[in-house]
Image (cartoon, rainbow, N blue to C red; front, side, top):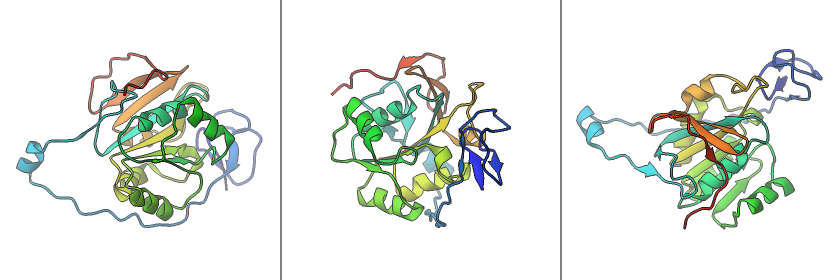
Amino acid sequence: MWFCWKCQSRYPVHRAWCAVCQDAGTIAIEPVRPQAHMRTELQVASARDLVARKWTTVESRAYPELLVSRGALVALWGQAGGGKSTLATRYVDGLRGAVVYFSAEEKLGPTLAARLERCGVRRADFHAVGQASVDELVTYCREVRAVALVVDSIPMTSFRPEDLRRLLEACGVDVLVYVLHATKENAAAGLNAYLHEADVVVEVSALAWTVRKSRYQATDGTARAVVHTVSE
C-alpha cells in the first residue's frame, strides 16, 4: 500500500502525484508498524481528590512562554522548512532530564546531526532514535527515564491519533511532542483527529511559532521566534 505523507490519502499502486492534495513527489510506501500492545495502568480517583490535586507544569527553558502540563500531547504543524523540527529539538532540549527524539523522517545521519549542532544540542542525555519498533521505543524511553518524547514526523509512522495518548503513558514521559505537515492550503495535513487529540497545537511558519489551541493558556495569536537564546 502507498500513501501521501501530506494528506494521508492511500493508493494501491505508486503515483507520481497525489490526486487529493495535488502535490507531486509525496507518495511513499506506507510504513508497517510492528504490532505491539501498549499496556497502560488503570487510573482512578475521586472527584474530591482530582480537583485538589496539584498538577505539575512542564517548563522548557527554551520556550518559557509555552505553558504545558505533565501528561500533555503537543502537536507542531506547518509548511516544510518553517522550523517545526527546530522548535521540537529546542523545546525538549530546554527540559530538565533525559529526552528521546524519534527521527522517523530523517533517520540518524548528517542532516539530523547538523540540526543538533545548529541548535547547540550536545547533551549526553538527548537520545536520538532513528529506527525502532513500538516495543523498542517504549522500552528505551523507560530505560533512560525520559521526561519527553518527540515523534518527527507522524506521517512517516503508523501511529494513529488514538495511539498517541497510550504511547505517552506507556513510555512514562511527561510530554509527547509530535510533528505534522501542512498542505498547500496551509491546513494541517492528515486527519483532523491528530489536532483534536492534542492538548496544545502550535503552528510554525517562517521560524515563528503561534499557539493555536491550548488547554493551559489563552491563544492570543501572538507569533514568537523559534530561535532565540536559551536562558541558563
